[in-house]
Structures are given as C-alpha cells and as structure tokens.
Length: 80
Image 1 (cartoon, rainbow, N blue to C red):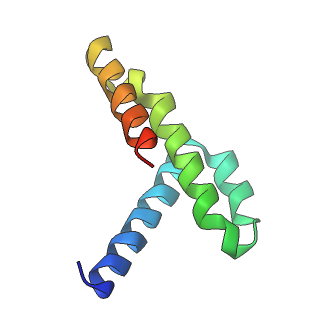
Image 2: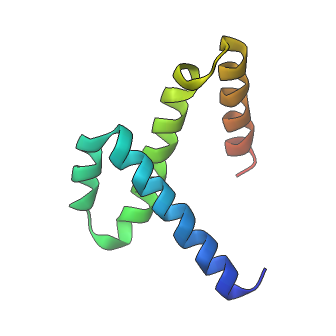
C-alpha cells in the first residue's frame, strides 16, 4: 500500500469512527469535539470501539453471533 492510499484509508477509518460516535453516542461526540485537535483521533477511535462493543449483542440476530463479534474484537485488540 502506498502512502496516498494508506492516508486515504486512515481518513476513511477516522470518518467512520466519528460517524459511529455521532450516531450512537451523541453526548460524547459533542464532548470530543471540544478536545484539542491532536487528541481527537485517538479519542474518537476509543469511543467508536466502545460503541461497537456495547452494541454487539443488540445488532446480532442470535446471541452466539453477538458473542462471536465480541471475541473478534478481543482478538483484534490483543494483536495490537
């Protein structure tokens, strides 16, 4: 992946994080907008992760699928 496409992918990921927080955790979205700009990316990523894991069981059609989503997130975080 070259620098331009990597930068584009990161921008898209950040935009997705912001939208997740805005759609499902609006109060925190407003608070995060008040952070210094250099802190916002990390803060939005953490809050988006919180939204994803909090909603995992609600959006799954079967509780086992919800648990699989949570395990996937746990494994992804463990790799970091």
